[in-house]
Every structure is written in C-alpha cells, then in structure tokens.
Figure 1: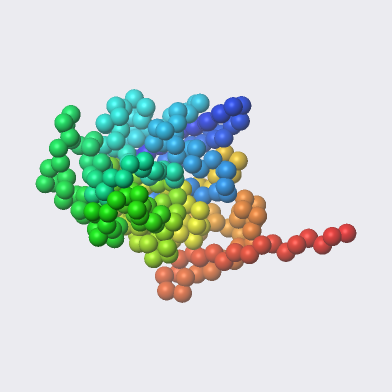
Figure 2: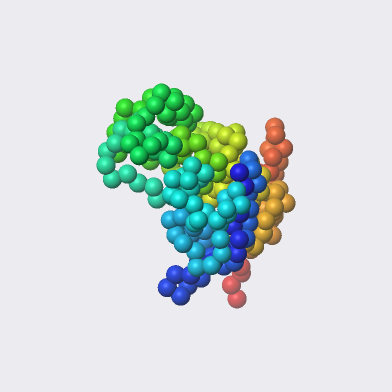
Length: 260
C-alpha cells in the first residue's frame, strides 16, 4: 500500500521543525530518512503515525487522508515503532506482542489460534521466541527493540513506520532485523542514523536537514561525498562491498583548517 506525505509542515512554539516536506513510498518499497540529529526526521514520522498533528499538509495512505480514518482502521493499515517506545507495566513478552492483534479483534478482545500463530511467527522472525515468557521490563534494550518490532509485524499492517529501529541492537541483529523488514513485503518508512545500513537496505533515501528535504533518490546517487560533507560535516570515502558491490561509506573528520 502506498503512503504519501504532501507539503507537511510542523511549527511548535514559533519554530518550524518540518518545512513543506513532500515524499512518498510505493507499495513494497523501503524508504529511508537520513539526516543529522535535530533535522526533523522523528517529528516528521510522529505525524505519519498520528502522534502529532501537522500544522499544514497531509499524510495519505492508500490515497486516503490518514487523519480521516478511525483509530482501528488506521492501525490495520499502519504500524509504528517510535524511537521512545516504552512500557510502564511488566507485561510478558508474549502479552506485548499480542497487543499487535488488538486492531483485528472485536470489542471483547479474545485471542484466536490464528492470533497466537501470528504472534509466535513474529517473535521467531526477530529471533526472540525464547523470550516469550520473560517480563518485558527485565529485557535488555536490544531485546526490547526486537520484541517491539515483533509486535508491529504481528499487527499485519500494510505500512510500517520505524524510527531508528536498530537502536540498541548489536550488528548481527541490526542486519537481521532490517533484512526481515526488507523481506516482509510491506511498505516501510524508516529513519536511520547508520548511512551504511541505509545504503544497503533502502530503495530510496531522503536526506533531511533543517526540516527540509535536501536530496532524494537511490542511495548510491544521493550519498555523495559532497552532500555528506555539507549535511553531516564529515569526509566520506565511497567504496564497493567486496562481494555484493553495494555502496559502503568510510568516514573521518575533515582536516583541521590551519590557524592564522
């Protein structure tokens, strides 16, 4: 299912955090948002999953304004993993993942065999099946992240919105989770800090700086040395992965300017 962001603007306390952003993700695409800290990535995504109402513009999913949908219908179409997702009560991991099935259940939520199967498959898919009976608050940061991704997958959305989904994950689980998301067939919109992960997994990347889109396109055409110097203030060396040929980036700081 396609998702479109049309001229979206967010102003808070007189500051424009997102400025006239327009972008889209086609059915089955994985689209990445990259940019320095404070560039507006998370604010933009909060509007997409309805945690924040934009000052102007619209988010459309399957051609319909997301804010016109009921909460239940919106949750059937879109699932989100915010950067600051927390649980205040010590539910078990199985209970946390089962919450993803609530939009598909009636007024009196009662898990079916199909619900349990989907939750089991989602947990197994992120390598967390052995955690099912553990209390969520006893988990490490990386374990919690995998469980929350499993909950989003168990929700069976058409669109998945992820804000820094690889936070707290070791490198093996970063690669596994993004490969799982990439192979899910869902339309995915994600913010990523790691530019190499973005280059490896994203069909398209949008570079955000100061609340505006400053570059868009395939990773190998967008993530140029000039752009990375301008936006991130780093010197980047572009190399090809020795086996796949995929773009990889090696970073260092630009040489210090001589003092007069």
